Length: 260
Image 1 (cartoon, one colour):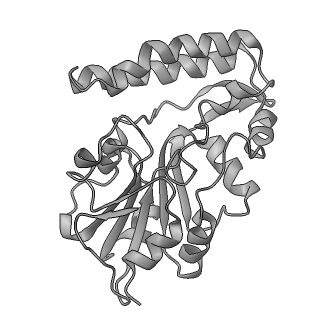
Image 2 (cartoon, rainbow, N blue to C red):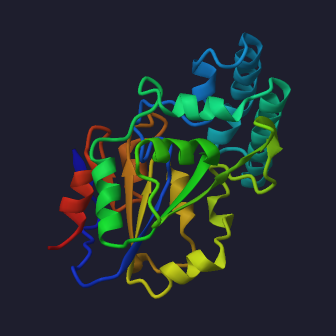
């Protein structure tokens, strides 16, 4: 099912770029997130899984509790991600484990038509910026395994640091669900997306609309996949132009948005 809130289209002659979330957006709604995949393998000890779950039980309710102040939630999200990364250091996460987990279809898989959608963007030289609160190393490994790490794709995400193949920390610029609007793109990427006519924004959370700031609404086409039970359809319709049910294909994005 596709709910059209605003029937926005891309004309054939218009120049565009795409901004997309990764977990639950490019991947299926029932896929594990790039933060949770390793907890579903036997690659790390049971104690890691227990410690990770404790963090989830403490911080996830804060992430989704909109009755709390936004600044408080933001600070707690940064705290959560840093603490989780410290677990990777504590339990000696190996860089090779990320590549192993990225190959397991039981944990993560593209949404239907997503690979074809990425091929379409590459063929038409359309830049794709992935802004993910997940683990960037995993996002990159997954795309490489799928033969989709094309040169029109730029990933802005949380990057784990490794030394001699063992995790030693995380880059300072933590990205979480509440601060995607603060992502700073490098100049060479800004050059590729300047002077575009339209932007397609793809997400699976209400806060994903924050991935693009300071652009007029008539330049944006915002699409969300509604697999998250935390959000009601009527609420999603306030923020997005199209609401896709979880089973819809990325080919429907091409067929519904592009005017041939």
